[in-house]
Structure formats: structure tokens, C-alpha cells
Length: 235
Image (cartoon, rainbow, N blue to C red; front, side, top):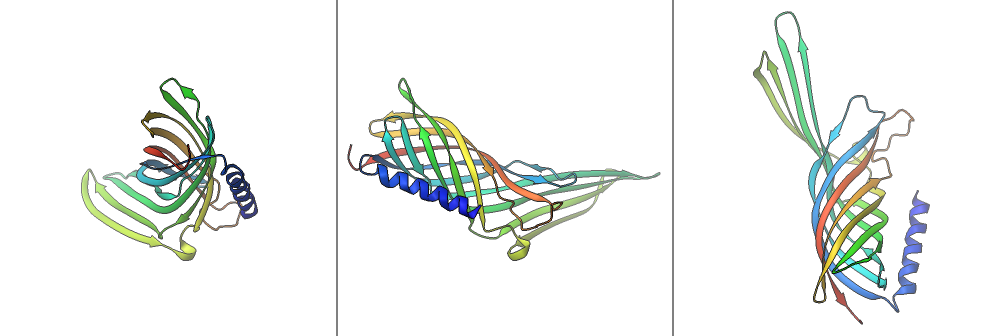
């Protein structure tokens, strides 16, 4: 996988170098929200739910032709998921209910590199994006959660906890995946104001187990963002 990543990066950088002499460059910013979760394999009964978290990036767009560009987006992205589980047990005299709620927080420095097709849609401009993205953990994983115990509908016990996972207990420092999306841009003078929705598909197991039956965990997310691009250099 590392070799494939290096080859992909070399190919994209060669495209940049070949196109710089004729490309119009834009720079800009985008900000939005991730609708993130974690996909699990070989897990019995554990289901993660969507967690809303922020994303922000600086944009470097190389416009190679009127309808095609390459865009690099170094930035910050918070990911993770929520977990909610309720178990009810009954004996002859009492009903016990156990409620567990928690969330896992992953903070990444992230770099998507996207090929973008930008067809004209009258006054609007379409945006179709596809490419790889690499992310690096900016800090250790954080787990926050709480539990409640009810007997016959009455709360009898409540606990909260927070744990930081790092080293062998935490996730890998690096993750790699694919991202694709669609959106629209609207020109205002020299500016392009845009909105875009994307889907992020993590390809690397976040934890270091090696057995075929070990639980595997992958980043998954939708995202929505708005931003602006400004031309720089020659027209």
C-alpha cells in the first residue's frame, strides 16, 4: 500500500509540473462538516452511528483547461463516530435496563488531491471531484462515554469516563482512502463561491491486528462544505 501511495503521489506531482507553465492557479478556503462514522468487520453486534464534526482546508487549484483542474487541499478534519447501546434484562421480579452512550474522536491533518471536472451550467459551474486522500493523526484518539443503570424504570447508577488511546492501544498514525463528490460554483467577479458534497472511503484498517478474524475498523464519512476560490498569477 505504501508503494502504491508513493507512485500515486509521484504521478500527481508530475501532472502538476507538466501543467504549471500553462495553468491558471486559484487559491481559496473551504469549511464544513463531516458526517463521520466507523465501519467495522468481524464485530459482533457493535454498530457505530454518525457523528457531526468540523473540517477546514486551504485550496490550491491548477486549472489546466476551462473544464478540468487538479486541486490539492491541505487541512484539518475531525472524524470518529457515536456508539449507543441499550440492553434490557428481566427476572421474575425486576426489569434491568443498561444504557451506554459514547463517542470516539479522531483529529487528522488531511490532504486530498482531486481531479475536478467543471462543466458549464449556464450561470453556474458544476464540480465533479475524485481522487486519493492521505491523513495523519494530529493527536491521540479520545474516547468519551457514559453509562446508566435502571431498575424498574428508576435510575440507580450513572457513570462517565474519558480515555486517551495512544501507542499500541491507539489507531495507526496514517490513513489512506478515496474521496468523490459533486457540487456547484457561482462566479462573483473574479471569485468562485462554491458548495460541495462528498463521500470519503477509508481503505486502511485503523488498528494493527493481523489475524483474519480480528476486528477491522475503517474511516467512512460524508461531508458538506462551502468555500471560495480566487485567481492568482496570469490570466
